[in-house]
Structure formats: structure tokens, C-alpha cells
Image (cartoon, rainbow, N blue to C red; front, side):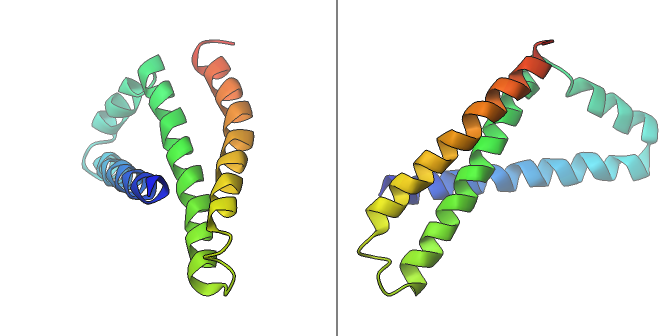
Length: 110
């Protein structure tokens, strides 16, 4: 059940990010100066931390989506769904730990 909740929450979060991204990118057609000002506001540690959350959401959502496809379309999927969810979590941690370390070292001036 928690994977179902996490998949929905990450999907909604990614949707809202994409919505905001399309809006701020569209601003370049209205006023390039205003676009540059908006982009400059993103260059701070809080947004750097939010970027880690965004990447975490995208990576989890992608791997869990593949797991859902396997559960739905592979005849043995339902039998192995708990094992596949554990695999999703392990892959997520394996990818997120090095990314987080590297990204935050750039965010905080490393």
C-alpha cells in the first residue's frame, strides 16, 4: 500500500514541478529580463535541496512504474511484487546517495 501512496505523491509532485517549469520557461517569450530574474531566484540552497527531492521523486516514480508494469503484465508479477518493491528501494538508494552527495557539494560550494 505504501508503494501505491508514494507513487501517487511522487506523480503529483512531478506534475506540479512540470507545470511551474513550463510557466517559468514560457516567461522567456514575454520578457527575457523577467525570465532571467526568475531563474536567478532559483540559485539558492533551498532550491538546491528541492532539486534533490525532485530527482528522488523522478527516480522512485520511474522504477516503481516499471515494477507496476511487471506486476500487471508478467504472469509471475503478483507473486514477486514485494521482492520487486524491495529492489526498487535498493536501486533508489544506490542512485540517490551518490547523486545527493555530489549535488549538495555543488549547492553548498564544494
